[in-house]
Image (cartoon, rainbow, N blue to C red):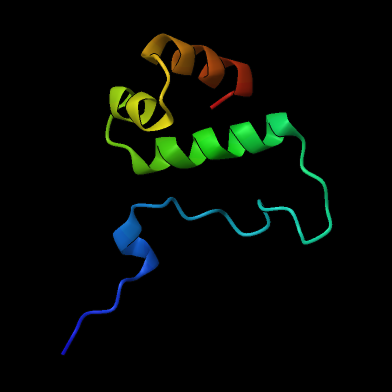
Length: 70
């Protein structure tokens, strides 16, 4: 039998319940960036790996972690 691809196979971070906006609710760009960075950080083994995934320098990720309190 063929295996099914599941969300866990994609390496996507699971969002905490209630952290995503409901349909029709606006989310600021800053809140969206914070949520995306938090998700990548939680699914990465190192900060360097997270920075590569995000396509930014590690120093930029460090600054954004501090900015968003992550």
